Length: 538
Ligand SMILES: [Zn+2]
Picture 1 (cartoon, rainbow, N blue to C red):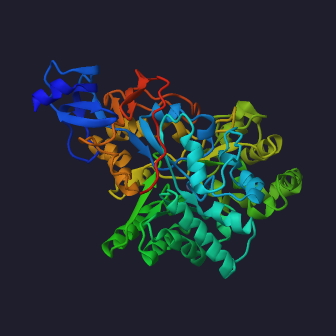
Picture 2: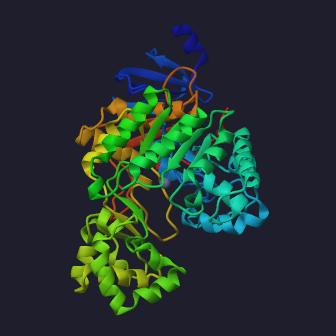
Picture 3: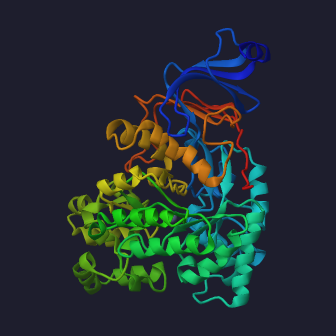
């Protein structure tokens, strides 16, 4: 055995690592040999082993490259295919096409509509729209110098937009058949499944039966159905039931996206929803969930206002919001208003809302509404209305709507994997820190500091678990024959650098990242390697 290894030599040898192999087994000490992009040896190598490159892991942790199941990098990949912020977190595979939103398929006459639908994830990319089918989009990605591997889901919203535009109505049977056909074709062309975003137009216009009819296009290839559900607050339990019903009805696997229960009054309800997923599995329904490791979500500050005030668009809204009498009424009503996803109430009032991005009033970035009130001598809600007006609605705020205890309960659950739900910021804008911090944060805060997860468990939730979910039989584990997507980190120092105040802070403690055996990050810096490939479901 040893002789065979010595004579053949390796492209890369990593020695003296604590191998956390992605299977949730306890770490073990060992060496790993890589050749032609694959792990070909795991064990103890003789000292004189021939290799092009040798790295002494010096007791650091060697893990499979992380798989980010949930990103919105569909267009960012066209502009920044290297995906350096992902690589620096140890991520070697990203999935796109999430929350109902995919870049394909697209018919020529619907390009403008899709462009407006996807504007908030465009990140300054100027797509050439030189694709039509789902497969052609994957081909375009395949022609880029990808730093990470990329797979995609097809978005239900995108499919609906192709057939119905932004129309709020029930589709005819012909239209349903057309949408189902889109889903089936996307699966044939390499999609890993279909996602829905039932809070966003046009997904929000779809009845549960419609989604189920379209998801029939996934059945033949056992595509995964993933949902950004209709409600993540007061109706979260009904929404989880709705998601399970799609999978149960069609006999396909299902996944609840970025699972949480927002709002103080819904604290603890994730215990109920997770029990629903457990019960579904007991009767043979293949359900899982994913989660980002933060107690806050982010969206525009306008979302603190009731739905009726948005009618007619942002300009109309600003006009209304300038009226003194209306402001007084809103200040009285909003804090306790019911019947809509009230982000202010969900966040426990102005103290739970922090501005991330408001370019016309930059002094307020990183400040909570209560602080801004104190800075300006205004009522915090008046200050909020003024921010909306001055920034003409182009702002991002984050909302601390979750109990830390619930975040940790969901994280610990064996049916939940880690995923970032990263949304790339527009040029000059700020974003939620999950974009640049998710994976090192789990390892630093939730493994080392809080001890919410064991190290092996956390690595599994970022590698072996999502790989199995996607059917990526060569990824997610350190075993002979697997792809050499690897990350080397120091468990004593690994930490996220991204915060709500500085979402671009870089992680620390992740020294080396390999994609297909090629060194993509060395001592924390990107090397220029572009070894990523497009993944298609087989
Ligand atoms: Zn989502």
